[in-house]
Length: 399
Ligand SMILES: Cc1cc2nc3c(=O)[nH]c(=O)nc-3n(C[C@H](O)[C@H](O)[C@H](O)COP(=O)(O)OP(=O)(O)OC[C@H]3O[C@@H](n4cnc5c(N)ncnc54)[C@H](O)[C@@H]3O)c2cc1C
Image (cartoon, rainbow, N blue to C red):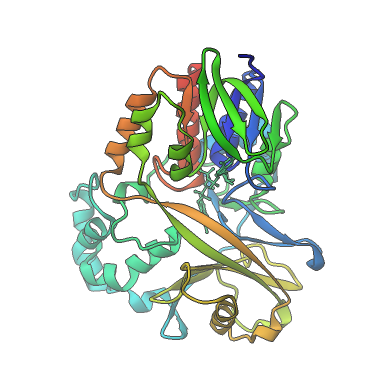
């Protein structure tokens, strides 16, 4: 069996593109196969052609100076100098049909009384509800934190493992704390994919992978097959489980059954002059059909304002989603200037996830197969890249 590439990556989200970047920088011939017609996965600065390219983030929207692996890639690509600070605008709550300040749901006394527990409460193995109720108080959790966390992960948060939500990372102090790019975060996946030493093929859905003496053979939906010495799966867990080649049954068993949260994202554009509310980062919904909305106000445009609403799947039909989104902005549906719909997916992690990852890693040890994604350390862009980096070191050796 012939080898066409030294490294083949399946999935062109940030996890897969990070994996491709690391191997290509070391001179390995690298191919990335992506099922959709664009790279970036959950990173998508949705641009509106009819609005002069005005864009709104439909997924990931903020990077931080604690994203060390991401910053290394930006340095490699000469992008660090283009980093764009985000205007400091705050989130508000959306509750009972009204926008309210976040402090209206905070029980300050309870928070102050509970806070010392932050230093002694263990986080490992606990759910979000259990851990955060302990350190900030049950009422604060029920009335505020549950909804704030749901807003971040766009799914019910109670049973999510607390460890997978936020992790402290060292900061690079010379870089702006929270940043984007003048054309949005899509700049990052696009720049990685545009490197001459990485080949990216979009619209290529991988159907099956076979283990060969020389590595792997990847079979595409159109009948073509490609050989590679090393392979990285950078797809959601159900896809990784389905694609796991023969001989990797233990790896498949370890990740089989990890769920996904489906998110119906609605992106709306309005004339700035018609939106009569103060600039805001977005809304955290309390018991509504959407989890959160994220605005473009962090990088204001003189003519337009844009908002991405992340809806629970099946909660409202398309028309009702627009009506609900407009209501939160004191606007009418006939004032929508442009719109787009995006299907986002995030992993729905549960108790015992760390044990699943340990079993997967044991099954992969010593093989030329890597598995990466936003379902290992956590869901953030940096968590995904941290996993891609460690899998790269395992496959190609640490530098
Ligand atoms: C609404 C929202 C807001 C967020 N905000 C932030 C934020 O502000 N900051 C932050 O750090 N993180 C944020 N995140 C999280 C972060 O954006 C994601 O976790 C991360 O981008 C996921 O990258 P990934 O490559 O692991 O997965 P994905 O982006 O899901 O990429 C997987 C890719 O695999 C492809 N694929 C699937 N099956 C196949 C197949 N059979 N063959 C070929 N390709 C296939 C998919 O099409 C997709 O492109 C947010 C996420 C969402 C949804």
